Each structure stands twice: as structure tokens, then as C-alpha cells.
Length: 92
Image 1 (cartoon, rainbow, N blue to C red):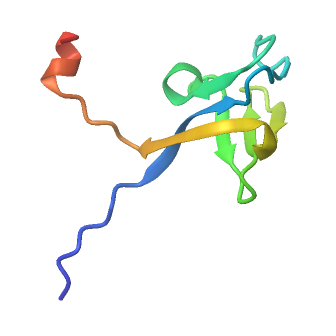
Image 2: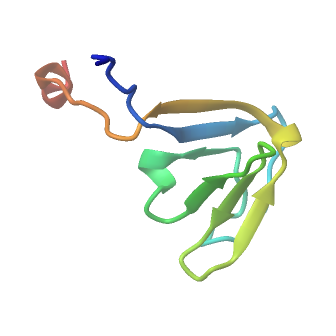
């Protein structure tokens, strides 16, 4: 029997575009986009990372914006659930 623990599920938490590259998606009121962040936009823009590395953003009305991996500067991945410590809650 193996006692190996499975690593936590990693999700795309944010991505940033190449410098001076912006998209004007007209999606949910955004006139331009230079990054996407799960905490800031996650409830407004559904984000899906495609197998080829592209990102699809979908607004609550179903309009989709496709962002090419060639325009993305870097992506940040992290656990699906972030643990909060007491220090974080206190703002220390």
C-alpha cells in the first residue's frame, strides 16, 4: 500500500498579458484588460484554460473572449482552495 498524498488541485489564479498588449473585450463593462485575477474577476468572468494554452473568458451573458497564449506574459497557478492564516486575517 502506498501512503502517498495527492497534491492539491492547481487552478489558474491569474494571468497577465505582454506589456502594452490590451484587449477590448466589451465583456461585462471592461473597456480593456491587461490581466485577469480569480479573486477580482472570478465571479464576473468565467476563465477556462484551453489545452493549447489559450484562455477563454466568458461573461455572465455567455459572450466569450479568446486570448491567445502568444499575448500572455505569464500565468499564476495555485491550489483551488487557499488556506488563510490568522496573520492574513489580521492583516499582519
